[in-house]
Length: 228
Image (cartoon, rainbow, N blue to C red; front, side):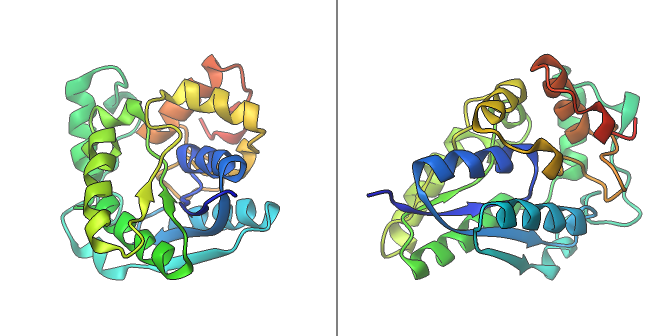
């Protein structure tokens, strides 16, 4: 019997592929999308709803309005400057670290996982599934396996059913994630990998640039979805 799971779904590339992987490996009970005042919130919610509707999965939007008041992230500050274009170098660690600091939201993933674990325990689900990856773990430590391992230990004390954390893409690059998505028949056109809420994916923010490179290397033609 497959164990019950709760998905953390931003509708980005990583979480969308994890959703489809989880549907094969577990009984997905619920998908959670978080609105913490990020610029792309409306788009993330819209596309998460598309994915959950396609797969007949219950979906909840969790509002965390106070999270935007923590720190000084350009994702949540209207006057914040999100690095784009030539200000980003995907393979330069120093530049990537600088970009990561600009969009960092204090303890965001820690907060998300603990909320998801509370929902999981309440509905008898044994595992929560976020969308992390090895490529961004280099500059975002809360995308790493060490973070998952530490969270597992914490949840073994804070949840009565010792909710587990699993991520199918934790050791993968973005290219490998796209390739897995191809195998799982993920409808990439129904994902939202962008930091902005434009009509189409901006193609210039770090998240878009990583997605664009991954699609190209995996021979998936998604260029029509990018503005640039």
